[in-house]
View 1 (cartoon, rainbow over the protein chains, first blue to last red):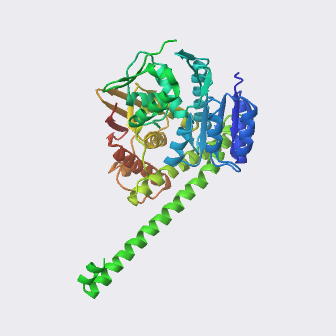
View 2 (view 1 turned 60 degrees about the horizontal axis):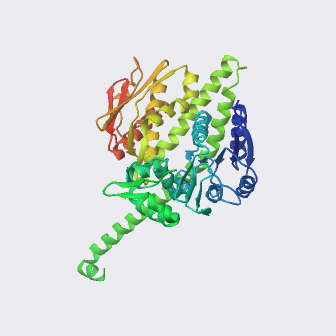
View 3 (view 1 turned 90 degrees about the vertical axis):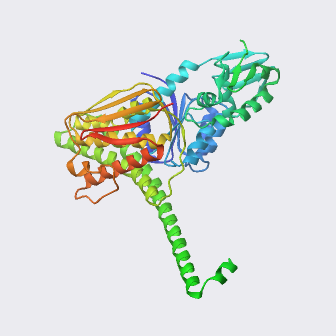
Length: 223
Length: 245
């Protein structure tokens, strides 16, 4: 029996009831928020292992909730929505969604995805990479340079993680984009500008990110 | 514009203006139709989710008479069919209007999508007492994940509706290509559907055949837009082939 804490953010009473019932039966500990504002308050007050987030919410849109949550937590967020168009899908990933499930869905598939994301998170927990005054906490999604926190966008953080978790390996731009994005939301041709912004923020530590001519980048930092 | 109008006779001008107005009217009508369909889709998705969650919950209980269980199974099948109908209608409608939805080309782990089918069709397979056998090797393709999902779902769902024993899904890859087969051993696609299986929507006497045809047409459109090949390798086997990374 698992005791993972999940926040369900869903304004439709029937869908929320179905999710809560199914997840409780699966052994999860749950909280429910039915508005965007309530979700933000709950997320601020309590730590969750995973969030199920509807996008069309009263008071505050789900994308706004996601953006705010991502600035403080790396817990997986699965977007569950009837807004299935490409712009919402891309925006969700850009803001740090872990997965995107279009309504309608079957509970069994959602449960399989939840378990997969929790498993991946558990394997990644408490990984920290340090070099040249830089400290990247993969779990907390926090970057410190000379002891001071620097802010990276979700995409920049993902690119940096892809680099520092493959030290000494030349990674092509396309592969870097694939490694940094769970659903292809980052394009290979945009990697250069992401890396340039990361370098600016890392100070001396930026020297560890080497450009590999005609290939891409390599991280040469050492812990 | 003024110059070109001056070069035309009065009758020709009237003809051009009428044709232009008709084309504009048609475009607007298509736009309105598309917006209406899109709103309908959006508004149906949430209640259908609630329906599916409720059916899933009910399916976990045991205390049903055989008649009650049969009714529950029919409801599950109808919900599965309605979901596919929504997804397929959107794709086919966009193709008919020659205005395809924007696509997102991205690396897609095909084997993961195939594995997910087990969960998506677990209830329906259980209701029909059909086994889903999945055999995959890791294959990554560059495609729109939504189209891949729609294609796989359609082929498996059509197969599930044709058999009462087994659906086999096999994914093979190598040398820059992949091959996927979905088969129902010993059970054939009905004769009327076999001829031009993936051709455009036709009139059918029964609702199930209509749904199957829509699924097959949408599968063809999805394959075409991704540059993949889809064929009926035998009356009981769908075969998809395309490039892998």
